[in-house]
Length: 349
Image (cartoon, rainbow, N blue to C red):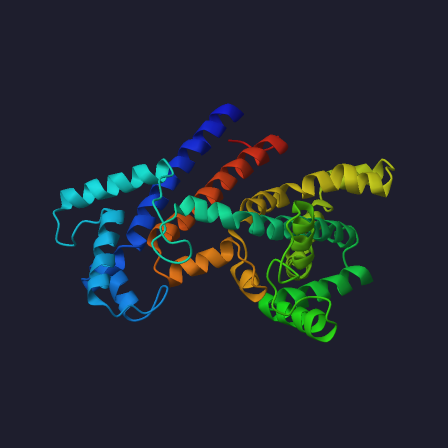
């Protein structure tokens, strides 16, 4: 099987996986209703009656109106409806997912707005946070992994490995709280309340506004880099240690090649291959944000949006976010598999 046939096969299996994910997503948001015998619209109204999802609602007429509006927006059949009606509802749901027709937001944030617009409004803040943090953690981790992987057992290897394992074991939110305490409370270099602006009035100039955002993101980016680079360092180090024991490395040394040439021209090029898959998956997930980080630093990104969608019973928004996460992971896996096949000629399809 050639590379072209392999790529087509991976895209086909990826599409099948996507259909399975869509079906699972459909079941996840409706199964509790079949278990409890209460349809999602009524559960939504009960949540408003109990004070969830944007405030307590005590007017029975308004609650009934919300339930009817819920059924209309979701085109939701009754739990006792014939299987044929539910099948039509499922097929319409699949079509809407594949055509990116996700409906409108049903509760806070952004009531009655198209959920795609709600996502796009939050996405830039998450990208400003996650892209620099992910790239820096990958670069730092790979650089240090090469340094210690080329000399396993050295003092530098032992000290960095010990430090990395200690950092890796720390909860990321604990590290972020410590950074907030030091830089915000003690030194006063950073606003305690977090957010995306260092002032109460903000900046109208786009360049100043962007610069202010990046200043506010320095602390969360630092926390993510410190908490994430040990994983990349360990991955790169272990991969390089395995490669350095291969026969072709011993042959290169027997030929009298310079150690740096052996390390970077022969060993590194092969040791980086297993890391490529993880890098692609990590970059594909940057848009989803970091829920805990965005909560700690009060960043209105996609991670915060995830939490708000679940807590406020905003089913269309939650369905869209879950679907996009799955879609991104599937596409990243396809790209990683094809990239690995292109980079490593030893791969057999």
